[in-house]
Image 1 (cartoon, rainbow, N blue to C red):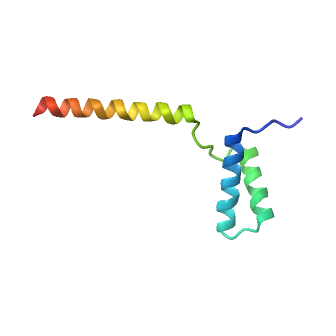
Image 2 (cartoon, one colour):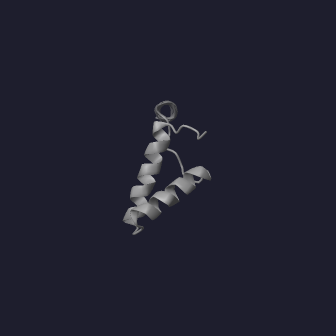
Image 3 (cartoon, one colour):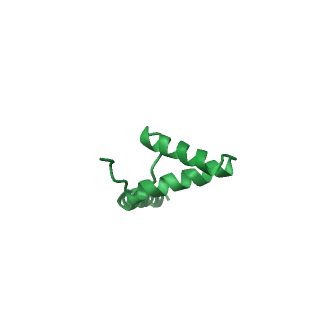
Length: 74
């Protein structure tokens, strides 16, 4: 039985198909390439909302630390 894809995986596949079609591949060939890339793990998946949130929080903390250091120097 085939593994069920997540909505994020479906989105990544569809975006890859569009990108390949813009590069000049016919739709059927672009679809085949995108699914092969997904199957072999070559297709990068977009970050999940939780990963985006954690990344944003980390950037904000780093920014605050830099600003505090800058204030202490002045």
